[in-house]
Length: 95
Length: 373
View 1: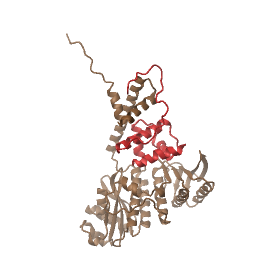
View 2 (view 1 turned 135 degrees about the vertical axis):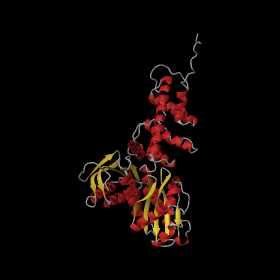
View 3 (view 1 turned 90 degrees about the vertical axis):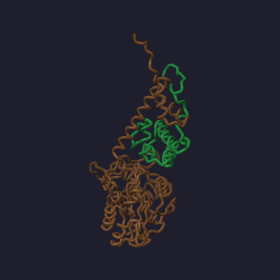
View 4 (view 1 turned 90 degrees about the horizontal axis):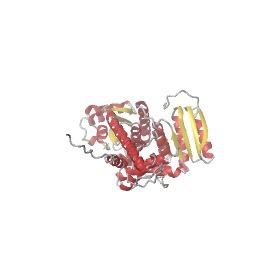
C-alpha cells in the first residue's frame, strides 16, 4: 500500500540529492497543484498521493535523474490507457 | 522554545489510528511536568507492538529539553525495532531540532554510527557528498519530518544555539564552539558557548582572516592543529594565542549548496581534535546546514523572484501545451498531461521543452495578403 510509495519517492529524492523544497518547486513547475505541506506529507508517508500527484512527482524526480546522466527509474501510475475520449475521434497527430 | 503562535492550550495527548499507524496528537506545553505523560503514551504504543508512530505537533504550544528528551528516547526505541517517528509539524525546524537532540543522545549512549567515515580536515566537501558519507542513516533515519513554514531568524538562531551547546559537550577537545553566519553581506556570530569565543570570532571578522572567515567564504574545512606553527593568518593568530586558544577547527555551513557560515570549534590544547572529533564536527555542521537550508538562508530576494518567475512561466507553458493537446487529441486535461509526459519520457526531453515545442507548433506562417493596389 503506502509503504512502497514512500520508499520509491522519498528514496529517489534522497538518491538525487534534492531537498523537500527543491523537489516541491520542480513539482510545481511541472504543473503540480498540491501545497508544500501536502507534498511533504506524501514523502513522509502520512498521505497517499493521487495518481496524478504521484506521476508529477515521479516525473520531477526522473528529470533530475536524466540531468545526472541516468534513466527514468521511478515508476508511474498509469498502466491503464492514458487518454479518455471526450467525443469525436482523435487526429492521431503526435503532440 | 515556542514553535506555535496560536492560543495557549492546556497540555493533552490524544491517541488515534491512521490506517495501521498510531497517531499521537500533542497540544499545549510539553515540559518537565507534562513530558512523563507523553512518555507514557509512547510506552503504551510501543508495548502494543506499534513500530511507527506519527507525532502530530500541530497544536504544540511549546516544548523544553525534557519534552525533547522523551521524544528522542522513544525514537531511539522505535528505530531499534525497525520503525521510527514521523513528525507532523507546521514548524520545519522542529524536526531538525529533534534530529540534533537524538543525535547527541545517541552519541552519549555510544550507539553505533553506521555509514560514518573519517573525513580529514581541509578536504573539499560538496554538501551532497558530505551528506551521503556522513549522515548517519541508521541514527536519524526514523525521524521524518512534515513541515512547510519557513523559520524566522529567532527560531533559526535558537536551533543553532542548540547545535553549539550539543557540539560543545560531545566533540572531544572542544573548549568553545560558535556558529558564524553571513547576514546582509556581513559575518556575525549567532551562537557561541561563551564570551571568549565571541571575542575570538569578532577578532577574525575585524582582521578579515582566520579559519572561521575562510571556511565561511570558501565552503571547505580549515583545521589549525597548532597555532604555534600557524602562518596562514598572521594578524589573527597572535590574538587567538593571547586568549589561550591553541587549536581551531572550522567546518563550512552550506545553505542551498552555497557557503553561508561556519561551525567553529576552539581548544586550548594543541592537536586536540582526533579523527572521530573531526567526524562529529562534520555531522553537526551537516545538521546546522540542513537547518539553514530549510529556513531559506542564503537565497536573496532577487534570486527568489527570478526562480518564481521561471516556475510560473513553466507552468503556464505546460498548461497551454495541455490545451493544444486536448484539442488535437480530443482528450481531457489529465490525458493531455499524460501524453506530454510520455513524449518527454520517451525522448529524454524535459517536459517543459516538449511543451514549448507543442506551443511553437501552433504558430502558422504569416498569411499571404494580396498586394496593395
